[in-house]
Length: 240
Ligand SMILES: [Zn+2]
Image (cartoon, rainbow, N blue to C red; front, top):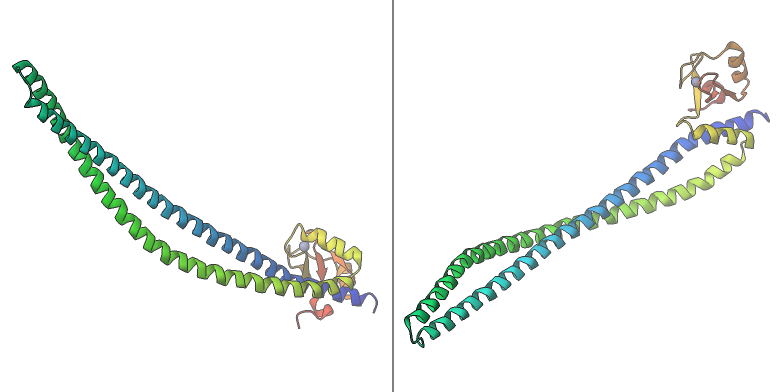
């Protein structure tokens, strides 16, 4: 009786852990999802900021070019005024040349300005589109974040309750077994497995006859091949 009781508790602990670890990995996965959502939100913000900066730069470029264009007009007006005041042919030709140069510059400038306006129009529309897109996506991500956070809190609470239950199970199992169990746990996902048809169900190693007898007497055994703990489900009454 003294031997069967801790072993039974041990098997119960193993069964319990399957669920417990599943919940733990679920929590980790949910936390990863939350991270992804937050990353998604950051990316959205960056995208909108990029579009906003492009709009800002395009506006600034147009402003600068428009001012330069006005400056050219001012220069031209000034030259034309001077034409009226010239006294000789040489001076007249010189100013005329200067006027031509300014006009050529103006001509080149016009296409630059047109392209700048077109670009500004494009980035402004792009920004408006991205802003609308941003609001919709952000709202959706905010909603998702809220749901995931609730999920995390729920699993957290559940795990806290389970930890208490688990401690009680651990207390009922000899320390030596727990130590071996923890060691195996760090190596394999299923450190304790049932024997079926005389074989370890993890590695299918044939259990020796004398070990089968020991298992029937609820002795704690490790598989000779994979070192997992073995038990006989029919003897332990597990799985009912
Ligand atoms: Zn094995």
